[in-house]
Image (cartoon, rainbow, N blue to C red; front, side):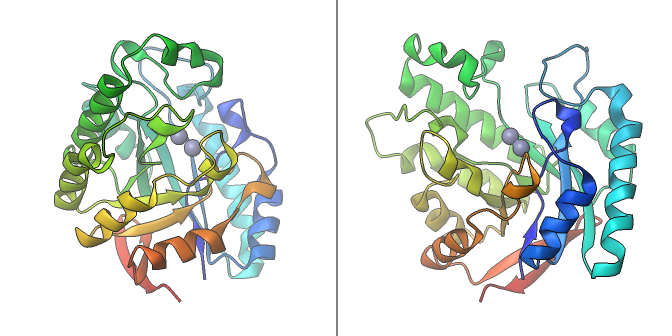
Length: 267
Ligand SMILES: [Zn+2]
Ligand SMILES: [Zn+2]
């Protein structure tokens, strides 16, 4: 039975649906757990226009309670978290976010390079016409490793999001992955297979199969998530993701409850 821990709400201003519709879809798919993890507020608001603001958190709580009420008759567990943005120096803010509610997990994601370059924003794709691809990839993976080293996150979000628009460096991509794999393995955090990548220009899940193989060899735990921004996107391509996980050598998936990990056989 699958879980889906990376899902959004309309509070981030680019998602749709109601908690009841998400729960209905989760029940229809037979998910064991529906995890809510919207884009977390950042300090120094306004920061950007695609996340919750600090003042939205009571409404986020309301979304969570409505989901819990709707799920109750269906043996569907609700888990809660946040998708937090990693930028250098953000550690105290994340530590603060951790204290505001008893979350089940925090997802760490990288959407900004230095100088707050939004490398994955379709509206800012021109970035890629003015950048050294090798340098951008190198810096992305250094920052990703730093995010793992912080030890603040249970789940490392969409690991190779940097490939979203298919700007790949020429050399073996595994050399870029190595420092991040080492840092994640040391941190004990899980990675996600994020199935949303299949529906973007890169036309494949995040991360690539080679990254999954390296992660499995390094003993990194795995979750499968959809990054749903609408109810019908919940659990998308999970069978494909499972087959890929098996191909990479994984035998288990990981679940989170109040930051505790449990392993479930991948069959
Ligand atoms: Zn994200
Ligand atoms: Zn997301």
